[in-house]
Amino acid sequence: MRRVLVTGAGRGIGLATAHAFAAAGWQVISLDKEFAGEVVGERVDFDLRRVEEIPAMAAAVGEVDTLVNNAGVLYCDPVDAIPEEHRREILAVNLEAPAALIAAVAAGMKVRRRGRIVNVSSVSAFTGHPDLWYGITKAGVLNLTKTWARALGPHGVLVNAVAPGPTRTRMYDQLPQSRRDEVMRAVYSGRVCEPEEVAAAILWLGSACPEYVSGVTLDVNNGSYPR
Image (tube, rainbow, N blue to C red; front, side, top):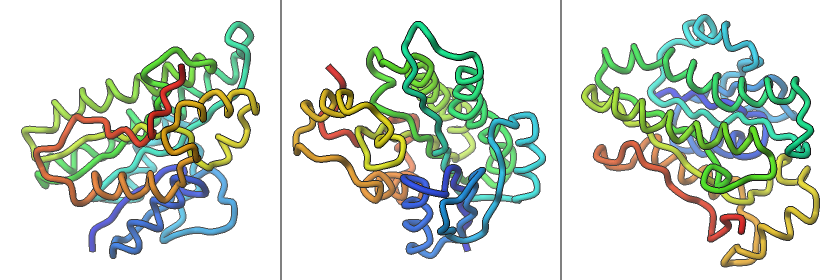
């Protein structure tokens, strides 16, 4: 049975992704630092801020066929008044942890000459964003994706990303109403994306897309680039 490790699997897009892979017959390892209640597959309680402990955690989890780097942190701080602890947490969870997880699973994937990695970025990667370090880290995830796609391509490993727009998650709910109104004005369908719709894109990239699809970012945003 194929195995997938999904980070941030306690809620939102991560939980929907865990459900999607489980429904497709995969063995799911759900990682989060806190679970809202429902757990799909094997539960791994781990705080991704502990970046230096990721190699040991990944070794304990064992080989995976697909890694989904979904976990993310966002704070609605003013661009000129961001607390240092928020900056450090965003950098660690949104960028350093995905980089460490990819490095941890890449060696085994290279040996097996197969594997897929899907990184969850955001439309915020493509434009100036009110949450400075969130936007910076999500843009960094796209560079991380292309760098590892190039490095692992000769070994048969695919590395891709998704960039969701406004999605019905706890992160979206914490945004000020003015921010939600602004981004929704650009959405073609006039509605918020459901986590299951992003999960479907992740499942495709993580299991079924053609092997020539690597180093790409699949936009799941419905026209919602902030203006």
